[in-house]
Length: 466
Figure 1 (cartoon, rainbow, N blue to C red):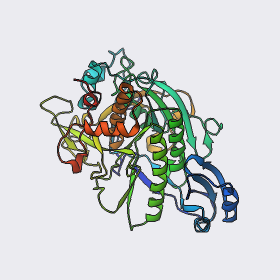
Figure 2 (figure 1 turned 135 degrees about the horizontal axis):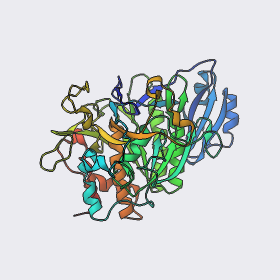
Figure 3 (figure 1 turned 45 degrees about the horizontal axis):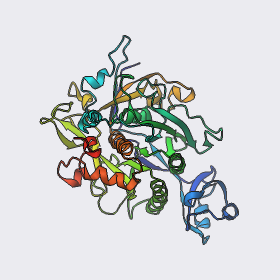
Figure 4 (figure 1 turned 90 degrees about the vertical axis):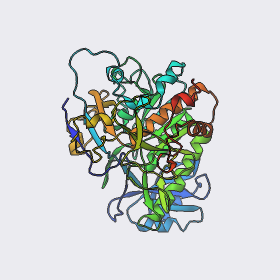
């Protein structure tokens, strides 16, 4: 594997909300939200009359997806009394604050060597080892669904915990034969999964809940005018499938925002309402939803719509860095808000997302700058990151695996999901709202709630470990 440094020009981690431009020649997808929580029986005919074509429904929450060639379709379908809103579908794009691949090792290694060396400092910071010592390591009865770019399930740190794989794209799902769930469009989903549940003794790192189950949901595809992105409606379908299967936590390391009164206001508010419907549905089934606050470095207070974290059912996560050293040292280490992390009242809780140390712009002037990022499982992308095409392992059942340092609220979110999995395993029957309350009430209060929310998530306190 090559050793290369990648730095996104925009400080965002799976969080750029890209509006797909309307066109009169190429069909575009639209999300239709009905006034009721069901899809009317005449949906196909009314959509056709407005100049579109029904391609799928999400009947549990009263949503439909249609394609149309002309932008006039949206205003035409809105005239139907049963339609609450109709907006052009949008895509979520992968970007992040900073990245560095760990060179591959050709010789034998000691199990969990990176964790044992203290390099996986985020897991230590959230007090996961104290929870393990008390017997709380997670369980396959508490599965975390990673809705992302897929998980490299052949990775030695993850193979024993991946219990389900699937994909949802514009064309359909794996069950339809329309897409394959093979990992992975980027290393993002695999990195997230390792922070949640890299297993003991499997490879070189350890996750927050090393015995928890993992479900891989690949919702990313190549979308015109967006690149390798995910539609909102495909992740909604994946969320509903995960909750119906009884998976206890949904990790969505994504987040986007816009200002009320600015461009795309109607679109943002419509998607927030639809997103809330889906989150309300899955949380009522007992599944907690953990999301990223986003990486714009902005205050989310005021006239801002933020998706999906604005939904009351979501656990909206901000990111922290560590000082003075890139290791967690009790009594010495302290937390700082990561320079890219969004903040404000909508942020429920914080967790390690990493930064570049005192060199906040990540120009790599510090010799060990990358160690302040989050180290986890990854794949070798080849030239994919530079060209924007899917990684080579997206087309086959195995990836060339490895380890990466990444930074972003995307990296903070799986720390919280891992703790949520520990709470579910320790308390069978607990509800999603109760899990959110437990995480907030037991968080390590580090001051300034505007920046950190309730504080840094605390695994030991959340499971009641001494």
